[in-house]
Image (cartoon, rainbow, N blue to C red; front, side, top):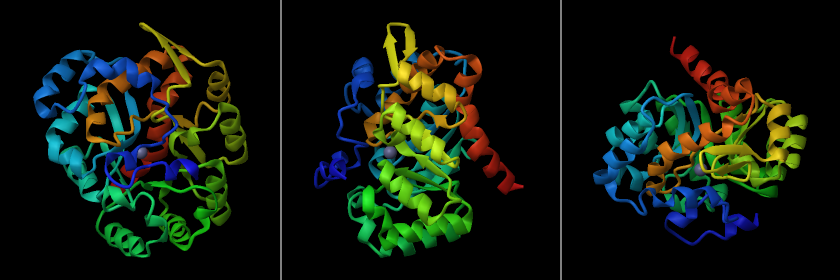
Length: 311
Ligand SMILES: [Zn+2]
């Protein structure tokens, strides 16, 4: 709960994934662009990308919110995604219009996820805002999605009526939930619907041993590794997996996914860097496990269901 309250009252900081300071890998990429130099900087980023990415990446955690699309048009965002060698990406946005714009530009790559937030400012208020339900229902009637999220909820707030209704809506429509939560809120959502499929954003910023305990308890729980770096130690061109996380990946190779988390517009310029960094540390795992985490898990869970619905 505490970390949600640490966010500022407004602005980009509100959408920061967590105030826990896991920014280590960012320091390595910090020289990339410094700030948002808008589309003028795009070619430089593109050139720094690998010419032919070795391993496809399923990016499970992208946002394309209003300030992002204002500065980085859909065509340029998709160019970055292709340059990064993304096979598919799960995209949710405040508002959902961003997701729809990106999906229209690259229907082969973008898997739409429905965010409850209409603007950035709703990260801490949506839980008690009944109008969120009508918003979600209207969107669900109009568009297709693979999941509802990413939303922020911790502890007993997961039992508030609005959150309960969201869990219900996902069950009715066979959608997954992309939940930025502590373990307690994940447990509460599974209690509401034992059949729910939950993608646990940032693996809850929890320790590998706690994550493993959760994965043992819930077979419908998957974890993204977005905006955390503690699982990988990258030294120059060599990446290594942290031992505690290695055990988690080897015990549950089919439950993890990577993600960039573009929670501010400038984070879009890390999509390429993040894909390269992911390939680097994944290379320290057995090939099969690396491929599973890089893209096969996301593909199996989301892309295939999406494609089946199109038939
Ligand atoms: Zn996020």
